[in-house]
Image (cartoon, rainbow, N blue to C red; front, side):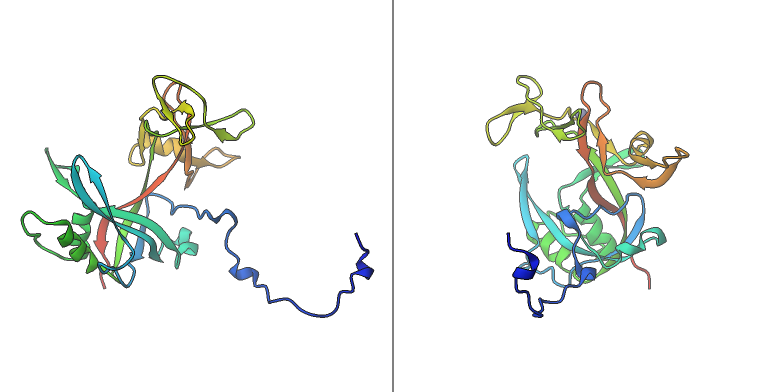
Length: 251
Ligand SMILES: [Zn+2]
């Protein structure tokens, strides 16, 4: 190695570096904290040719998804004001889910709620097509709305689970037979146990609550990673982000 004096460095300059514009390392932005109302804005173009539409099959039927990577946060609770201006990932589809209505159970999709509550559509035609859903959802382009952030965790039976090792790292665990799945490279590993954790349950919130190191009191912040509490499982689970309770912004 030459000495510094031998490198012959002159006074030429490199391009300007602006640390203020440096992205976070690893590229992982924390999820918006759950249980709070934020105001969001849809992208300006949600037309049929925009790059946000996808389909999936479930029990022989085709559904459409609106897959956003740029849902803009336009207003946040005071504690999370640093998130305003961020663009987040969120997806919504038109597959119906059972929901309680008094003593009965009814089925509506997230898309139904968006079209009614944010789009102001009073009635959807009988036997709506996927095209109609795309058409109605497209009209939400540029619109702002309020929604509550929610998280849930799934210990997926169909996917390899990650388990915390003695050194603190997390990895897959080999295992054959019941409760195992095959990875892409043909390895038999332990899958999740099928347990689900909803943010609406007090036990889940207690499990995910970050606590003050000194007082042990909850800080009001939730951790994205929890360990499955089902006996003999203990898989490491990442939170899934979702939105609900959609409301228009009242001006
Ligand atoms: Zn589990």
